[in-house]
Length: 153
Length: 103
Image 1 (cartoon, chains in turn purple, green):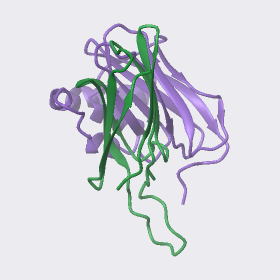
Image 2 (image 1 turned 60 degrees about the vertical axis):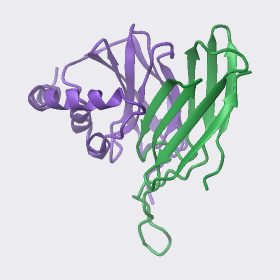
Image 3 (image 1 turned 60 degrees about the horizontal axis):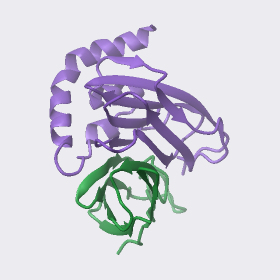
């Protein structure tokens, strides 16, 4: 475990708890609410904190599936999936984007915990799948190399 | 009025495979136009897919979802002829609902 991860854990253990209740209380009503703090977070640690991820396990039961190399960072197909029972929530984060959180999905019972979408990537970066199942958080990542960035002006 | 979505919903075994292609600029608010002015953000924030009134996927999106967003997912419990509705809402309050009949 490296120092920055320990920092994340320390911060989230203090600040995350109140947020978790609040966030996931509101997600259970009709339609998910957009979470400005999570989407505005400027780095991975803050984004995870705002999502309410306090402790997590890196799991091989969670997968980020994509090509190794994306030629066009404006359109990078990414799948996130989980074979953990009772997966209820999945998020996609691109670590080096100006705002890492890209999209998040509530997975109701009966829906497969596997979603494919397309994201923009400013450059080569680790892409994270963050999964919640039975109240616990699991994480997986994959580096996607980008030859032409998709966030510039 | 926003452009219609293209939705495909196909029953395959016990699961309905859904593909949704949305026409939307998904403008980040980080880009500048040729005059150097920042192009204001315009992006979808929430999306919900419902089968016969039951939510089968519920998504929130940020600016880094690609222009013309695409989603692919599968759910159980759908039958041929059943109706799937997809609704999105963007940051300017625009919204659109389209539907597909499961084939």
